[in-house]
Amino acid sequence: MKKLPECQAPQDTDAWEEEIKGITPLAQPDEKPEAPLILKHVSPSPKMENVYNRQSFSFLRVGDTSNLDKNTAAKFRNGLFKIEARLDLHGQTEKQAYAAVLNFIRDSFALKRRCVLVITGKGIKKDDDYWYEPKGIIKDALPAWLNHDEIRPFILSICRAQVKDGGDGAMYILLKRQRTLQQTEEF
Image (cartoon, rainbow, N blue to C red; front, side, top):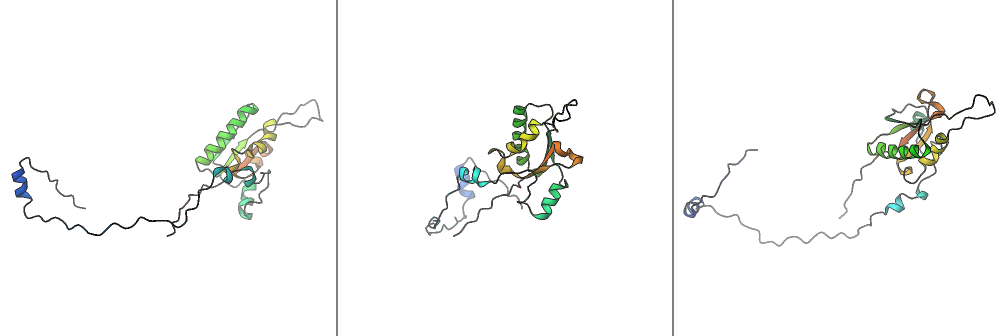
């Protein structure tokens, strides 16, 4: 588009009057402005506590992929999703690990990651006691943490990782996709 030359008003008013002589002003419409748009019905916006409450989400069970389609579920269980981020909880206390998981899930969702891996470790086992079963405090607590009200709205499904990614000492977490809300106007 061609830029118009800048026009500055001269300091001398007589020269200005001479310059604008012969210019006719544009005709202004005599119409009144249109009446403001009035919507017939405005639906109230949903309250967040009604959208994201405990009852609106089913309890996440490790390995339960019933809320996924068949192909996505198989791909998820078999570890075929690209792991976009990993969190290793080795050496952390239970309190530190919970805070790390909370921040990791929130950040991953905000960064639009789809599949993440949380490595808990398999727990400890005493060598001298053959009756002793491995006990992983963080490993056992992770499913309950993922069902917490602050984290659950971001998660679609969880399952134990494949051996190549940590086996029983790690967990795949499939996060929900962020969908942009498109507002439609009805007149």
